[in-house]
Every structure is written in C-alpha cells, then in structure tokens.
Length: 95
Length: 114
Length: 252
Image (cartoon, rainbow over all chains, first blue to last red; front, top):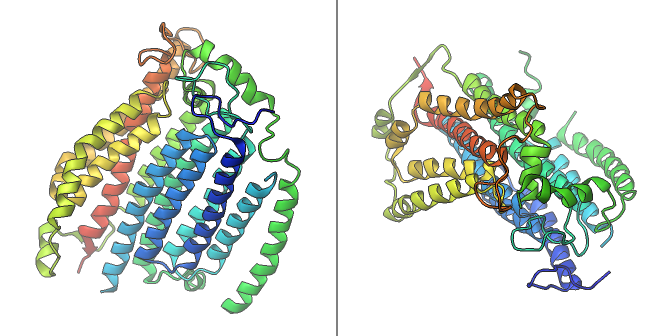
C-alpha cells in the first residue's frame, strides 16, 4: 500500500488526509449535538446551515464532490428557506 | 481510524433520536429528524471509502486510477434530495397542525383526539 | 407520563439501540478497506461503455436510472403534496400582499441585501445551467443544477421583489415546467422501449471524446430534464410556503 492518498499531481500523504478526516468527523459530531441542543427558532436554523457546510467539507475529504454539491445546495439554501418560512408563518399567528 | 467514522455515525443517530423524542416544538423535531437522516450519508460514504483512492471522476486523471466506490455516492446523492422533499412535506403538515390545533407542542398534540 | 420519565426511558432504550448499532457496524470491513466487487466492476467499465468521465452521474442516469426515476417522482409528489396540504381551506381568504404590509411597519429591505441578491442572480442562473448540462464530465448533475436555478428565484424574493417573483414564476407555468421535466425523463426511457431495447437504455450516439458535453448519449439529456424538474419542484414548494406566510389568513 503506497503512502500517497491521491495519485494526481496534487499528492497528499495518507497521514495528513486521515488527520483531516478525523478532525472533520469530530466537528460534525459536535455540530450535530449543537443542532439538537439549541431551541427552535432562527438560531437553530442557522446552526443547521453551519452543520450542512461542515458535512459538505467532510464529504469532500471523503472524495465525494458530487455529494458535496448536493449537500451544500440543499443544506444551505433549500432547508433554511423552508424552515424560516414555516417559522414566520407560525410566529405571525401568535401575534 | 478503522471504526471511528462509524462511532460518529452512531453518535449522530443517538443524539438526533434524543432530540426527536424529547422535543417540545414541531419545527425542532423536524430539524432533529434532518440530523438523524444526515447520519446515513456519513455511513454510506464511510462504507465506500478506499484508502489511497481518488474521486471517481476521470476527466483530468488517467482512466484506471484506483478510486473510491461510486455506487454509494450515487445512493447518498439520492438520499440528500429525498431528505429535502420529506422535510418540505413535514413542514406543510406542521403548518396545518398549527392552524387546526393552535399548538406546536408534540406532547400536547398527542393528547388531542381528532 | 411526565417528560422526565420519557427522557429516562429513552436514555436507557437509546443506549441499548446504539450499542446494538455499534455491534453491527463493527462487523463491517473497516474504514478504507472497501471489498465489494460492484464498485470496482463499474469503475473498470464505466468510461469505456458510456463515454462519460463522471462515473457517479453515469450510475445515476444510466446504470441505475430506474432509481433516479423513482427519486424524481418522490420530488414531484412532494411538491404536489405540499400544494394539496396547504390549499385554501374554508374560512380562509386571500389578502393581497400590499394589504399585509400597510398594517404593520415592515423594515424595508436594506440596500446591501438588495444589491447582493440582484448581483448574484445572473451568475447563479449561469452556474445552475452549467451544472445541469455537464453531468457527464465533472462533479455536477441535474439535481445540483436544478436547485441552483431555484435559488435564483429565491434571490429575487429576498431582494424584496415578491410581486416580481410571483409574476416571473406563475404557478401554472411552473407546474407545466415540472411536468415537462418529469415526463421528459419517462419519455426518454419509453423511446428506448419503442426502439426494442430495455427501458432507459442508453441509445443515443455516444460521441467521440469521453467527457465532452455532447457525449454519453442519454445521460446529458436526462440530466437536463432532471434539472428543470427539480428546479420547478422547489420553486413550487417555496411559492406555496410564501403564499402561506404572506397572503392567506384566517378569514372572518
């Protein structure tokens, strides 16, 4: 098993790639905990957005750029928009 | 490193389930469901990873370079889009529930009969 | 059952579930030692068979195209479901958006937000179109391109021009576009059947250069249809939710 993680002109040693993946996994676990512990509202939606971007970078480190693109557009555009619209609708009725 | 990604998958699943079960607000519950579903993306990509593999796109890389598994990436792609669709439907139901019952607390909603 | 009891019961049961899950996951071959033959088999033949250098898109639209048809219809049904669930009920009437704004003091959209949103609309449309039409070469594809195209419409709403948004994407036109996208995908598959091949078989000429835009037969065409269908579905969903927040109120 050779020591290079990528065979292209951009050579990355396996140890560095592993360190990157471990760091991102820890960050994703912390992000998921944060999303669950924050109460409902605009703050939780923002944290969900950050969690989506963290997941996207993790997928990039797992050599999956297509899934990265999908997760980015879904997690940073579509989900926050529909969640915020629902929250606006609910809050308006409370007035 | 052999099992660490799977430990993280189990952690995200557990944390998300905890959020779903002990939630007091329907929108918070839906967001925790999104977190639970995101654990499956990490699981899929973790299963298909090949140490020393490159992304399965051979546009600027010679044709038979060892690459990671592309089938689980296609599955994860489908998964992401399905999650968005399911979330949209659940939010529509949450709005209707609020309009009919006036409350967004799932533990109060469970007590209402029809 | 009080919330506290519920929490303790869940912690015990959840610990058991996670323990069993971890036990099952430890039976996997370990991270990085993917053994399975399916992935390696596809990697070996994909570029030669389909002339597409993006193997994931080739799987999505050619090898496992049937799964993608199912996913398209999940999105289609979700858009229809949101429109059905949020339909106007008895006792609700629709007040126009101008009426809503007169009653309360809404902060005007700041010029910074407006400028950024309007500046980015054009490049976002271009990026979405590029992604939807280059599925076979790079990491791109119908879904990502379609959602980016929907983002452009959301940007128009964010820049404060809700009425322009409604005029640019009337519900009838978006419905038709979505139906064309979903139907186009099915028709491509059926035209393969009409030629005597299996459903969704790649029958268009494969092109000379692997990875060129005009190569890989039906993959590019299907990706384009998927892109416009996904864009229309998300625009419909967002429009429904916007109607709920801004227009429909409980009548009386």
